[in-house]
Length: 341
Ligand code: NAD
Image 1 (spheres, rainbow, N blue to C red):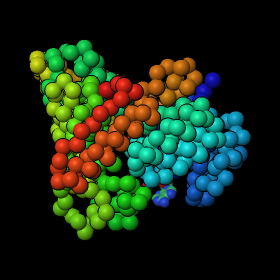
Image 2: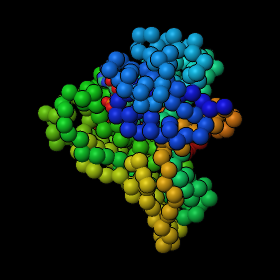
Image 3: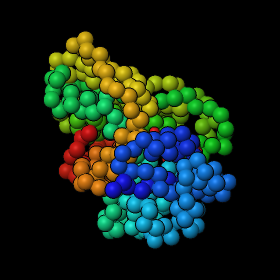
Image 4: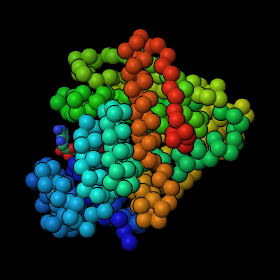
């Protein structure tokens, strides 16, 4: 059995990453599409041999409940549309993969998680790095204390953004925020799997160099975390500069990845002189196969909805800290967030 996936939103990520990756997956395949742009229907149908009964638009989307070819819906729309389509997918009885950031508020994350629970469907986040070998090596280093007890992590996830001033990422109603909602989620994730802990506090700062372009959304944010062990973390995210790295220091050494969060291959080295080397495979392929194995063979869900919600709780705390002039905001994660990865 192979999981039939329908992509909702055929923008650049679906077009250039997810659909090509679905040609190489072992446990899932591209079974359908949902698009608001009629011209894309024929292009995708021809390219990927998708039958017309598996093509939907945003209006007739709910009829997908009657379609046995489609087991899971992958929501790849602008951030503020994730909640609506994840919930509609769950109500249609389909498993759900939600792109990052999970939604634009913690409240919406809860609504998605509850809808999936009520419908008895599985929910996974599009956190491709969780399935990626360098990232998994980071988690092993931390778990096995290869470099002692971790006492510091820094993580940067940023790129210089420009171009169309009407793009949805600059529109707060559609994006929910700027760099933090976009790349910041990767820096938050790196800080957490770099220490193996969820933070207990965050303080944050915002910087702006092009207010005429970033009218509604944050351009650059830095934040500092405290972790239960006493480790501290420092992250940056930006739509102004380029940065793509993580560095972790422990009581007996350090390791780093650079790049740490692009589509790969990533690259890394350690204080022992080791250069990390893993064969390159599409991260999206690995991620979708991991989700399919969770659904089909009951393997662990390595990027559950709760992880997306945890990260959104941190995003909200960062915005709260900035609104309060950099004040330290306490975070208190329940045991359900115990994965610390
Ligand atoms: P995009 O702008 O290329 O595509 C967005 C799609 O949504 C388009 O097909 C567009 O037609 C459709 N859409 C529907 N309603 C819209 C509206 N009101 N305004 C604008 N577009 C609308 O964006 P993208 O880069 O493909 O990003 C889509 C989602 O995927 C985002 O949540 C983003 O964060 C996520 N993403 C994740 C990764 C990753 O590495 N995991 C990479 C890129 C994007």
